Amino acid sequence: MNEKKYMTTYWMDLLTYIVIPFVSLVSTIRVVRSLLYSEFSISFFCFLVVEIIYISLYVITFFNAYRKSKMGYICFRILIYATTLYATVDYTLSQVSGYNNILTFIGYLFVCAILWVYPNEVYFKKRKELFKNENNFWFKSKNKRNIKINDKKETLNDNKVEVEDNIK
Image (cartoon, rainbow, N blue to C red; front, side, top):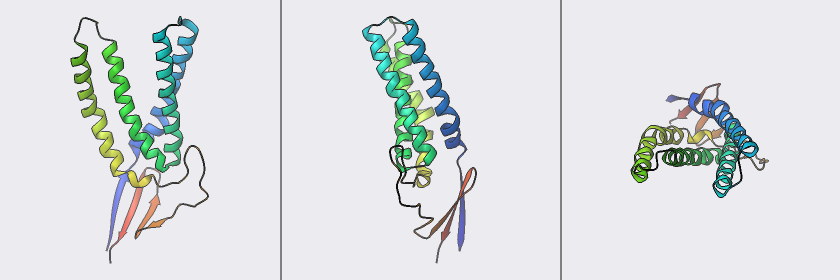
């Protein structure tokens, strides 16, 4: 008996080909603009270090997600949490100084966890099997990708992955 399951990859494709390059470009422009028009200080230096790490994470995730490597799955998960933490800290620091920043941080982190982290965790855990390529950002493996794994035949379409289970 053959069962077919269809898993769409629209969200992963949107993140890989549109969101990640766009955020990387905007962050790079933000860093260049800050270098040109800001005065050097300790907070400026901290901003630069955080932004460069953030851009590097986006670039590494993009290349690994594009190749659908095993590292791409790990990078996506790290990116989800890093984006949440970055947005939460950024939002908390941008609030009025007289306001309770701890409650703002916890509240915003809770909202981000419900609206961003949880749905993405569920999405990527279901699609973990797509990230089987041994090639990652740093090196290419000489091993070819196996098409038949554990009685599952895998076919990649444009935006769907078809998995056939051969149950005997």
